[in-house]
Length: 412
View 1 (cartoon, rainbow, N blue to C red):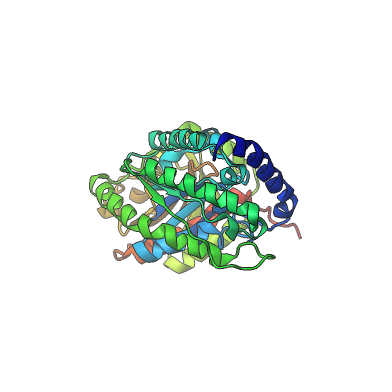
View 2: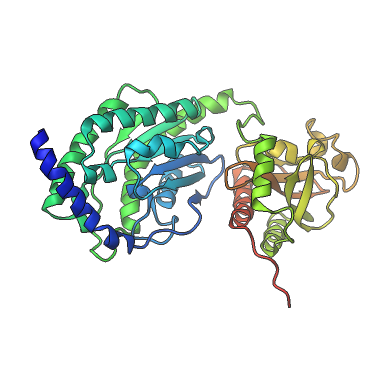
């Protein structure tokens, strides 16, 4: 577009988009926790970052928006679990992306999905600016993410497929988006860890719904097709190289202490939803004891417990000290036969723990602040991944309660 045309078209299109703001703001969008977990063990961790499809316009839960849909699509293809978190900023443009990324701990993720461009297409962001700022955004993610993490740049889907922008001026934004996508594909091509993924228009779900669960399933499938094999390949490398207990970046004492203080969980009364989790975990695993425990400096504080539970446990002499370094928890069939644990005070002495299973619990910032623990004085036969998958489900229930802030037990 030549300069005289831009002088006329840019303010016209931006005014038209601004006129739709109130209508867009009335659309439903998710208000629940910005994450989803699909069933399975040895889960992949994925971050969705940006605007557009990341926001979840038209639905009320991230479970049916892109995080949930993508997690389920990946699990179907990989056979592993998936934890998909989203940082969605409705009005985000590429020029602000690096700043928005600054507070995100990118090293925690196996994959980052970038959904930028819808707002830039509507604003007719200059193509030179798009190239420069997307380059900076990719550089930021590559520099701060794990060396084996994969980055997937989602293309801008057809603008006119958005009901409120389906009009002649929407065609101008569409044409601009196609040029932006061409630049995105060009920038991604030489980067070994970065893949451009075109997004097509989902099936029309009507003016009133804007987007629905089928829309997000459509985009999730388009993203999962290139993501799954790359995550598989990265996992083969990291599983070969990774020694047990070497999960990076989760055990900063300073970050953990700040997360615990921010949640206020140590000063709060016991939260009754935890009691339900530990009781159900005990029944499922057929054990006598279970706890939800939070790390307070160098020792553990039980927020819920069932059965014979040792008190005044020091972190360095506990199963928890090991579990917080594991990707998805661990199961120990017989602690007395395991050199890592046979000399722990509560294995060699009362309550003589032999079977143990634990899952790490994370605060809102991802810092590992505690564990769900199930244990028994009788050993159990070694289990396959199904037991660990069940453990993960109970752990995620406790973790969700922690992140919500919990409810106090009602007085009678």
